[in-house]
Image 1 (cartoon, one colour):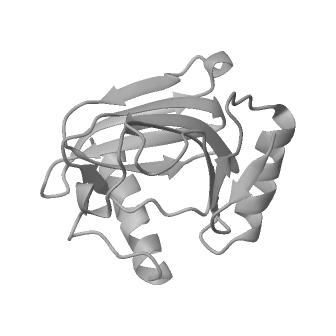
Image 2: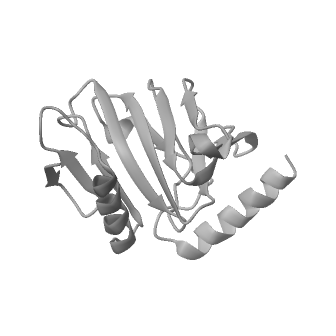
Amino acid sequence: MRMKKITDEVFYADQDIVEVSKEDIEFLKKKALQNERKRCRLCTHKDVNDKVHEMIIVHTKDTYVRPHKHLDKSEAFHIIEGEADVVILDDDGTVRKVISMGEYSSGKNFYYRLSEPFYHTLLIKSDIIVFHEATKGPFSKDDTLFAQWSPEEGDISAQRKFIKELEKSIKNH
């Protein structure tokens, strides 16, 4: 597949008919392992202005997904490879629901759709997770709200502490 590099983390499919192969996934995994935030995505939509955004996303176990919610958008998520817990949180950070997810053959949930603006995050259980995500476009940073009670990206120590507390809260949930 032809891809256009936007950043070390973001590539766009550069063709009218998009087909994703195992080799493409392996390329994305390699790129995720090489960059600072340990993630990579292939956007299969044409650009940020498209009405539907579909992405193949790779995160490593070390990827921090800051709790966030989307305004006026739904999100659909389908696991291709790996396992993760999707944690849905109330506005105060209280765990509302945990969705244990894995690829289809794992017997776990492999798909979810979030239609309401709940805070959510990922706790990645496998070394790498590959998933397909679809959401409404066009993309605007203002449509995503990050939880003020969660650490910002870059503060590794605070992130680790936050994740440990979240995992403890899930066990008690």
